[in-house]
Length: 272
Ligand code: CAA
Image 1 (spheres, rainbow, N blue to C red):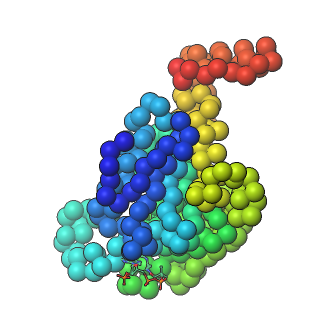
Image 2: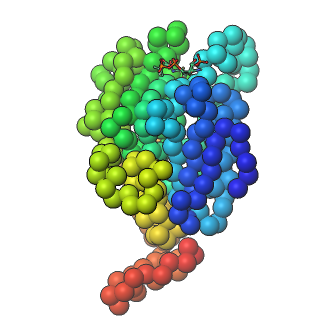
Image 3: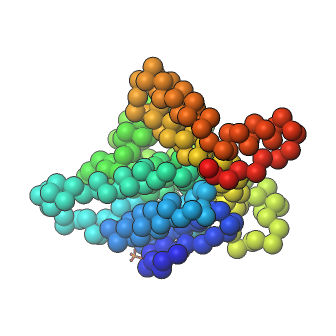
């Protein structure tokens, strides 16, 4: 993997790429250069044939404390508009392989929005989310008003975006913002020799390894149809799902997966 100034890239499992935001002095505030490193590292992992799934994480204190306020404070409307400020963030949503966010500490503003662009969010009990932009004279700009609203509904989204209040890991779990809170103690027990990696990251890496062990073509198709459900009316979405389902009968992994079931053995997927 290439070297990046603001992210660390590792391979905690052979088929799992772990991308860690690494700008600790600014609580992983997302400057333009930081965000470019994040997207470059993820695009590189996404294109790597040996990677089946990816994990994005921050530090124990902060997943990311938002867009870099010091960098944006003097920006003009003309500059923001002409250069389509933040439009490049959508690169994250174009990745084809499953991406899991492991969130500890602050996930604020753009940090919350970055997590919401991932396919699955796991949270540690310390996770704190918010869309605080209203408190600095703006509104969410990385998809918060749209993605959060689709998940938590109008009244909660209005409350959160209009007051900027933080919500914790358990509220996020109740509302479906995160799929699960990974309890520190349980995670630590399972950890064995890898204590340098936090329980939530460990759980996300294990989940990514499970996903990577499935047929790659089916995993990518699965991500694609679920994401399509946010863009399409139900009839179109159902048609799209059925067509992709049918097309998987052209793959070796479908033949292998179903043969393995019939023969009561483990499948040997070849991602083809
Ligand atoms: N931008 C730039 N720098 C930031 C930052 C941000 N979003 N968040 C934290 N930092 C920096 C601080 O400036 C500080 O740097 P120095 O040590 O050089 O002074 C360092 O990180 C540590 O921060 P604090 O001293 O404030 O730490 P704390 O523990 O007292 O507070 C915090 C933590 C509650 C997260 C607080 O830093 C905070 O409120 N940060 C801003 C959160 C925010 O408003 N985010 C939204 C940004 S707007 C946005 O994201 C737009 C969008 O939709 C894309």
